[in-house]
Image (tube, rainbow over all chains, first blue to last red; front, side):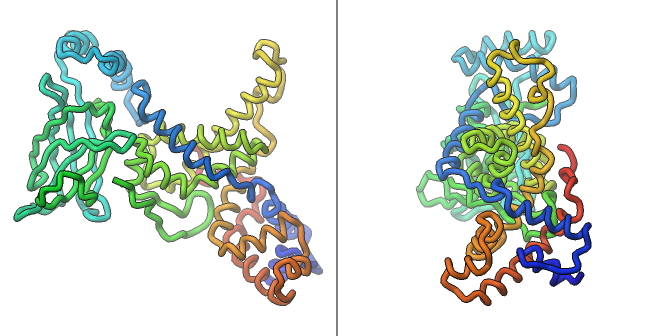
Length: 222
Length: 210
């Protein structure tokens, strides 16, 4: 049986001298092409429903994307969760943190930290950066150490942003080169988990240029 | 700031485990629940996920519900997703699990309280009859998705609607010879993309469990 014969048979035309095994395979393929699930289409509203469902899950302070966590770090993370819920319930005072964290950590004083590994975008594919967000009484101190981005001067600079699932951007500082940068945020990474770095022009426009060079998501530090 | 869209690599190879790679920016946005990124991933894979769910559930409403659950579960698992891995196989597995969950929930609902269900009821412990074929549905849908819309419609009319080539020619108002040549060309292309399904009808996800 030639390839043309097989294709003709697949296309629904009669074929002669079919090998039973080959015919069975081609019949299987024809059955798949006739399967209603191959042609069933979702309603146009499903995209909005899916987007809303993910946004609700992302906005829920009790949920976060799962990652590969060592068992010991997993127990620490679970112990930390009651603090996260309490903070988002409006009890995030420095005193509450000072009490909760030492208890959870067995008496030590470990600051609450989040980390993000930023990856370069199409504008800067070779760029990378590590970001650490540390909670203090003054807000969230952000340390950024990056590579692969040129220094910007003469009317151009980099700006860092935190973004929430609804797309709201909060600026957290500007800098010229991504080595040993310290920034500050007045919003928590639990609610604004996306970290982005954009290239900006010093033209008085405070809005993001949209020219993202680095992007990543903050997760609790282990 | 809108995500500019899912970065697409050239489709290569065959199977659920090959094809589209999502760029890091869209993936990071998806992990953060960024609506634009979620839309981008849905745009690339939503219909495929829906097809898997429909295969298992056979009901439009349940399939849409399972699709929503699948994307939420994908978001929850996004922290462990390996960007070097093709997203389709990862999503296909999640979609299958979400649809099975809906299937079993519906099976329990038909009995009322779980306490009323016969512990030996196969619906509680087994998979839907079509659970093994969902990856084939994914691949066929993906292959059809690469066709021109007119060619996809020809395949649909021929296989799903069950029309003869003469009936197709009459409906489309084109010569029968044109239908024959187009049909041959399209099926030759489909045979190239889906030949592995013909040879092994009982295989499971070639990318393996995730």
